[in-house]
Image 1 (cartoon, rainbow, N blue to C red):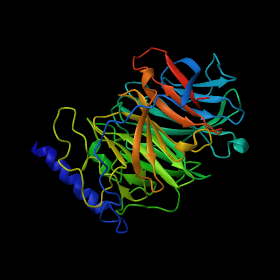
Image 2 (image 1 turned 45 degrees about the vertical axis):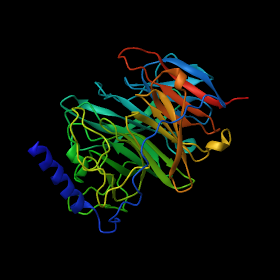
Image 3 (image 1 turned 90 degrees about the vertical axis):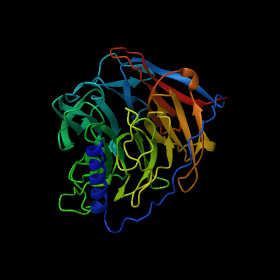
Length: 392
C-alpha cells in the first residue's frame, strides 16, 4: 500500500512539473453531474442489417462510391459493396499482433482520399514480449492495399496485450490525432511525457511531427503529445463544426469518461479518477486536482465505451451536434445530448433490444448512423454492421 501511494505522489509531482505555464491552474470544466440511469429510446428509428458473419468488426470507413471498408480485429480488412460482404479479405494488410485486446483497430480515409487514395490503419505490432500501437498508410486501389508504409510506432514497447488505444481521427486536411493507451500495467507512464503510453498525439499525414509543439515542458517531453493522463481511449471524433476533439476512455471499475481534448491539458489518470481498481482498492483517493481536467460525462458503473461519433446530418435533425457512444459492457448505443458549449444536458440508450456489444459508431456522408456489433467469444464470426435510419 505504501509503495502504491508513493507511485501516486510521484505521478502527481510529474503532472505538476510537466504542465506548461499557459495551462489553466483550475479545471476549465466543473466536475460532471452524478451518473443517472439514461432512459431508453425505442422509437423514431429503424435498424437495417448491412452485413453479418464478421469476426469482431472494429471500425468502418465510407468510400466515395458508397462501399464500406471494415476492419476485423483478427487482422483482416473487408469490403462491403452494394450491400454484400465480399468473400475475400483485401490483400496487402500489414502483419498484426494478436492476443487479448491486441489486433487490428481503425481504418480511416485521408480527407483528400478522392485525390490520393490514402487509407490509414492502426493495429498492434510485435510480440507478446514487445509490442506497440502502430499506424500504417497505404493506397487503396479498389481491390488491394498498395505502397504500405509504417509512419508511426508508439514507444516504449510494452509486454502486455492490453490498452492500445488505436483510434485515429483527422483534425485537418494534413494532420491527424491518435490515441495510445497506457498498457494496463504501466499506468504511471500516462503522466510521463517521455512516453507515448496514456497519451493523445497529433501527427502530419505522413507521420512526421508538426512544428507547433511541444505542448508540455521538460527536455524529454515529446512534441507530438497534445494531452496526457489517459487510460484506454477507444473513441475519438473531431467535430469540424465546433472545432472540438472528443474522446472516450475506459475507467477501471467505473469512471469511464467522455472528454473534450485541448492541447497541453492533463486528463488526470491515474492521479484522479472516478473509478476503483478491479481489486476493490482505490487507484487514487482523488477525483479532482488543480491543473487536471474533468470529463464532460463520467459513467459509473462502467458502460465500457467504444467507438464515438458526433452526429452531423439532416436525417436526424434533433440529434445534430450530439455524441453517440458504443457500449460494450451494457450493450447499447448511448446518445449524449450536447449543448453549444459541449456540455452534456441529457442521455438516452438506443438499440437496447439487440443485446449485442457495440464496437464502433460512425456517421455516413449522407447522414445515417452505422454501428458494428462485437461478439465477445473468440473465434465466433457473428459480428454485424447495422444501419440506423429514421422511422417513416
